[in-house]
Length: 149
Length: 332
Image (cartoon, rainbow over all chains, first blue to last red):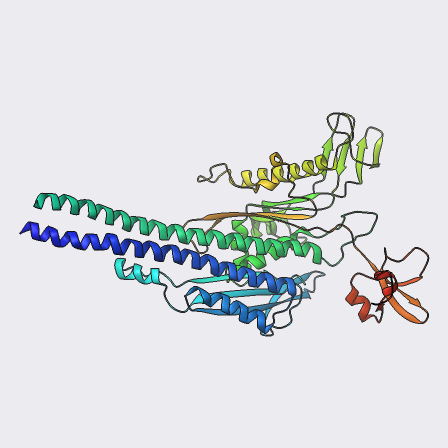
């Protein structure tokens, strides 16, 4: 009886080790690459805008294509905060950043803030939820840079 | 037979347990690594903006006589750094958030033409101007991230003291007979005039050393401090590479816990490279207004009427690009 039980258990374990483990390792390393690649896309995009001082529709399309080419659907939000310096009435100045929705022409000193949010859970996250009942957060990153020109 | 299967299954279960643990540790590591990467991007963007503030300052006070010289307010640089850092973590740069970021910065340095500023947490007392001692006590005090006094790039020999600057064309010398402007660089240990590399290295060492001292002091009451922190190798003199070659901004961000469970650290150096201002001059020739770089126009050939710092400015003032001097001939 125990022999039969052990045999069944053995087959199950062999399946987990032979099929489950490679799958987990594969999805984990893939996820790490995706996160890094998305961060790289974001820095490339921010560098492009901060160096040029403008954001053309082609640049934006290029960025969207780049972000969505890693297998996870991502939402992109681009915010422009216009730098405003005013006198404070006591012979000094104060700086504030005002949200603006004009994304085509930028002034030097403006801040571009790029937010990327995953629409759905990734494979590794689903696996984590399936096997370990963990609820990892969806991928979300924010980066910001200041316009140079 | 059944026993053997049991042993094999036990081994397999141990493997699976190890796999699960490995998985958990790996995901944690992965998250930390991404956060570390993000922090380094955030610091780089913020310090870039800070260095840009060095350039964007209203009056640079540059001229040809002072190579690499200009003056700005270091507090502006730090403020810009904090603003951009806040945006990188999706926080509006309001007073509370700015204060939180300041707490993560044990030390920062702004290296300028003829001296440097070190920011560290210093006791600050708040009171209105002209307050009585009782009122002052009521306002209280706090430790805040503030810049100290500007410190010169001092160099000392047995005979004199020198104040170096980044232009490396001249120094100021203080001897028993008085204070004077001294052409060239001071003598090094061997007695001959020091090389420019040596002088730059000296400046680097001064800033890096003072920054390290500020970081050390800030952490002197920190129990988890291991007396070590990471400064990029460019900054340490052993490699012989100079991080500070022009006006620069250096900042350490330590113990950030904004998005990660464990505190993480980051360090960034960002430099600017302004060698000299290349000014444009505007002049009138045969009834038409032209502009050209001042160094392109032969001395005495034109009478400048205006000075501009960019071509755009010149064009806006109604001056045209002068092919004669700018391209060494007529338009193609």
